[in-house]
Structure formats: C-alpha cells, structure tokens
Image 1: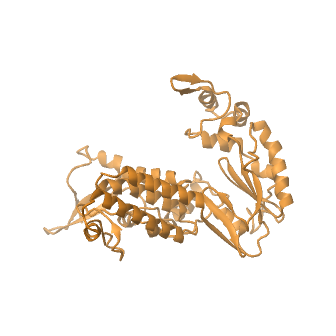
Image 2: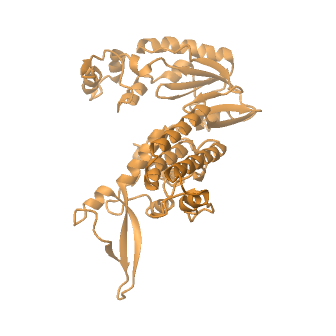
Image 3: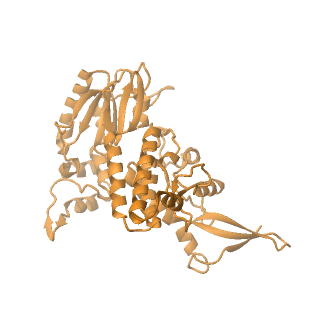
Length: 414
C-alpha cells in the first residue's frame, strides 16, 4: 500500500489511471512445465516436481494434478512469484538505475504493484493502461495464465479501486487509502457470527475468541486511514456484547448488566465502557486502540539475508512496533528484542503478514512461542527481594534445569 501511496499521492500526480487486473484461477491454471523450467538447476527442483504431480485426495478419491498449485499450499505463493517473475519488465516498467533517484520509476513509465496473483498497474492514461494489458496478455499465455475479463478493468483513481482489502481513491486531489467496504462488511459479519455462536458461553470464552480477531484485523489496517472505521467497529462490537449479555441474563436489568460486564478494565485508558470479565480482570480489546502508523518501504537493495545489512534491519525492527500488549512491548524494547537465555531474536518480522487472518495467526503463534517469565532479584548482603519479568522463547524456558518451564520464579543476583 505504501508503494501505491508514494506513486499516486499529491495533486500533481500523473499516474491516475489504474489497470485493476484479476487473473482467472491463477493457482489452478499454472503451467507445470514452464514453472519447472524457470527453476532451472535449483537443488530442490525434483522435490517441487513431485509435489506438483502428487495429486489431491478429495472424498476418498485421488485426483491427478496436471496443472496448477494448491491454493493455500505452503509453497504455492513462492511458486507463483517464480512464475510471475519479470512481470514488471513485461508491463513496460523502467527504473532509474543511478543517482539520487535510483530505484524510482522513470518519467512516462507505468508502475506495477503485485502481491502473489493480485496486481494493479498505475498509468498516465487510459491508453497506456490498455497497452500494459495487451503486453501482459501475451506474456501470461506461456505460463498457462490469463486475465478474468469480467473482473479486469481500467479505472480512474477519482472513482477508486479495491486492492488487497483496501480502497484506493483520490478525493479532490488527495489520495486516501482506507479499508474497503467489502472488507468492513466481512469483519462485521464474522464478529456477528462469532457472538451468535458464543451464546450460552461465559465472558472469558468471548474474550478468547474475539481478541485475536480484533487485534489481527486492526494490525493489518493500522497503516491506512482507518480511524473512523475502527470507531464504527467498536460501536458494532459493543452492541454485540450487550446483546450477548442480555441473552445470557434475560431476567437482569440493564443497570446490572452494565455494572457486571462493562467498566474501566483497562487502567491505561479512561474508558468505562470496556467489556470484560470481573473474575479475572481480562477485557476485550478495541479496534481504536491500534495506533495508526505509516509503513516504511524496504529499500530495493536491502535483503534480509545480507550480513552487511544487519544494522539496517535492526533499525527497522526498533522503529516498527508489533501489535503486542504494552507490558510485552516494554520488555521487548528493554531486552533489545532478544531472548536472554539463547541470545537470538524473539521476533522475526522482516516481512509483515499480508492479510488479517495471517496477522491473527501470527499473534496467536507469537503468544505461544514467547513466554513471560518471573525472576526474583536479590541484592548482595540484604534480604530485600524484588520480582521482575523477562520475555523468553518457550522452548528455551523448557530447556532450563528442571526441564518443565513451570518452576517457581528464578533467583538471580542484583
């Protein structure tokens, strides 16, 4: 999204026409022979071939796979990137190679932005967008791919276009990137469905089910113009939780329900309308608590595998805050992002998740992989003790002498 914003922002922007392209069943139609040819002498080429030709078992029957790669397969996105490598050159994109503007598109050149099989091309005119489409049609054919003509269109940015769950549109010369209406509708429907399924359950289970969804969706859209959408979703969630409480306690008064389930559970915020569990003190997150930040593009020459760029990636990690709780963020910063037991990084986030569901999975996996450990620090020659906390890898904590990771607080000297 940041690449699109940098290209199309400002009143003097010249690339205001968009080729909104959709590939027809891209993962299903990918040509195996072309893909394997692109892999060349790659060491795992034979393993990839076996995986592509293995077939699919559905309802007890095996179906051969002569074309395509399973959508949702662990390496399918990587294989799609291999097949579509070189698309920018085929579309006529040209970059400045030297000087202070190295890496930016040449004047008059279109700009193509792609993620897996989703792509848009920002062009100077409708005619240029049509030319880009013609070039790509012939380029995609050997790969077994083609455009879905019903969904592929050329549109002006003043009308707006949806891409990866975002709506990109110019308003009186100002470019705004917001969550798309379709994405907002999906999250509202999902939250409503979850709350209907939770009727009869306790408040703690409501928190367990909804918090990862809220945290994941807000983390994905926190880089866009999302404040109004976040506030509207918070209102929707409040309505859902109040209805859930009324269903759970049909004979209780409105005052009793509000006193029982709503209050200032989050001491860091002056909000007494937070849904929570009185017994545990846990509470439901709000979309609007996600801080709106602007994503910084990775430099075109920066590879996470280049040891000479360790400092560059360390600076990016310090600048970007992952969507974790305040206490975990403070510990993460105090420990410089490293586990005190093994010295390795606690989080590996060179590439952020690219979908709300991926953010949800990332957050859940991170909470399982990183554990907050209590330590007791004693001063020399004094009985005074104080308890502190640190973040460690779960597997590192399990390797401690007791082997369980559930021992009492560790004794450490001051």
